[in-house]
Length: 210
Ligand SMILES: C[S@@+](CC[C@H](N)C(=O)[O-])C[C@H]1O[C@@H](n2cnc3c(N)ncnc32)[C@H](O)[C@@H]1O
Image (cartoon, rainbow, N blue to C red; front, side, top):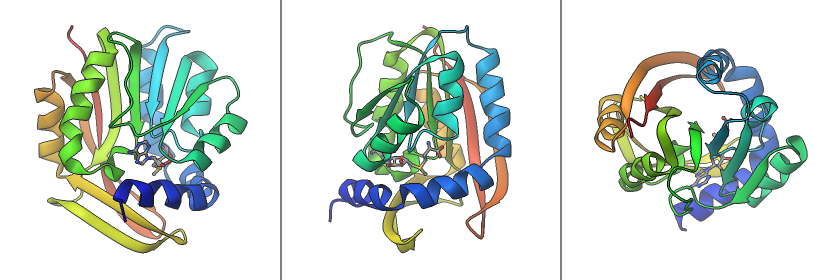
């Protein structure tokens, strides 16, 4: 099966269960980085949230202060997000295929989402992020920092559905973001427990130098 279809079908099915855990287990780092991002933006700034999921907790919080567009490949997640965050705009699309005019956004975020995109598409995605950002705009994402990365990994029972991931290691992720044209402001690895496992993420804040 096409891995992207598998991911879309998977999140259609497990969106509620994933979100319930994410609200509990992926909180502390997320809150800190959201504060850090928000401090850099003017109220009303335009923000694109890539792989927004069901819109909680992140998109909802961002939409309190900013003009947010969320994109997700799962129609079920987009339906949940529209209910949860009626004051944001949502698009059902693959973040590696969707397009926006140049200089459209003051910020682009991607929390725990690029890990589900085949890794050979990551660099082109970061190049798109640079193009979509206004000069001085910022990208914030939580990217994989697990070991050496894996071209493809599958699990039969991720919250009850099959799931797919594809990742690079933290150093490669950081290098790709920089080579795509973003200036790294912050790049930290943070570890916490989630879904009965310990996971480490690379949190990146990077700016479009214009
Ligand atoms: C782990 S969830 C993260 C959701 C939310 N960003 C959060 O912080 O909790 C990953 C989300 O990315 C979406 N996703 C995965 N691959 C995608 C793709 N190629 N294009 C758009 N969305 C994608 C999934 O449907 C899912 O909703």
